Image (tube, rainbow, N blue to C red):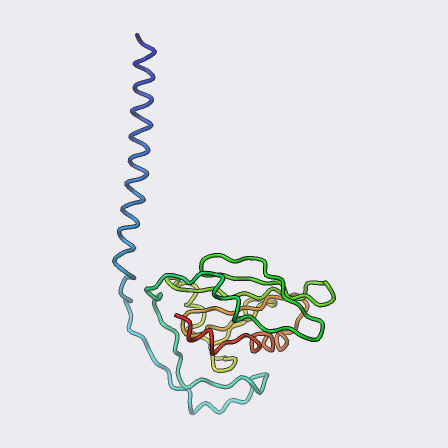
Length: 194
């Protein structure tokens, strides 16, 4: 008679644990339906139009009149990764793209020349990703009018339409080469994607 009693207690404990875990997950999901928390500090717009600095390192870069990066995440769902593929660069001169990953809000391709990987190109939908957006807030650089950042020594990224991070990652390309590849993306088309 003790065996069924032990099994019953074990089963009751397992069911109780499962209910607590599921209940906690549901509570967290309910919280996300309320949208992002309000920003504790107001957004500041900095006017840099009078900045005459010429030490930009590239003719493509220019000071921006004001940053346009949203301080809080966009309250939208990320787009399907397959919708991002058409904004990748067209290739020529012996280069080819091999798409590697496609998932919700993300697409990645390897850039190859003569069969060798030269770089990884990616588009990441930062909808509801405040930490991904934050690195662009203090950017003084831009590529084709979009806020740009250098991440470490091997990555260059831009924020398109306050939502999409376009990134080129390479250990062999110079920063100016990575910028050139970013410019080959259909950035204006991507900015219109909702």
